[in-house]
Length: 202
Picture 1 (cartoon, rainbow, N blue to C red):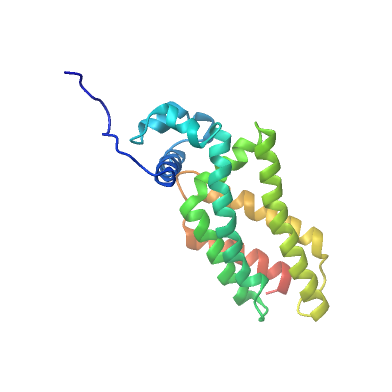
Picture 2: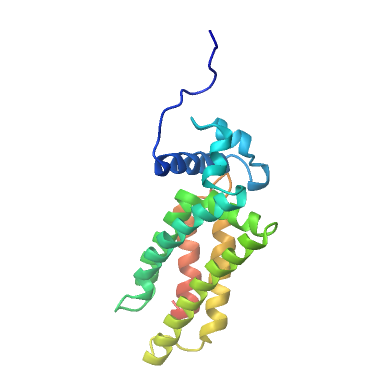
């Protein structure tokens, strides 16, 4: 009788199969950088065959894009704490920063993989730049509103937004995108201090 190897296979819905691949990818990216991720090793961590990968994703880059589309919504949701708050000041920023750092704490290796993949694939680079631009635009709009309201002064909205968002993206990727991971509370204090002092002088 033939002997089966690996995990037993069972029938899954397309959503379950895709989720299983994504979960395995996130786990693998916690152990090594994106450039070392292979489809063979990834699928060995699932109960699915290697050809199943290509049912749901064109290649590794498409996999990263699929994951990041979900994380973009999660990042924007926590950012809205500051963007849409009727209140102003450092306390509101702290709540938003805490939410963003929480997303990186859970998914930092994947977000770091997006930056790595953007260096090799034009499609990923376009999505990556677009993701950053969404947050730059939203931050610039909010700073402009607070400038007009008089709660922020002495800064230019667009250049300040670009500097803060690019700083966030790189700093959080370095601190929470690769092991050994930094202490999230220390990361929150650092990011909050920079934003609060830049925008509110406190």
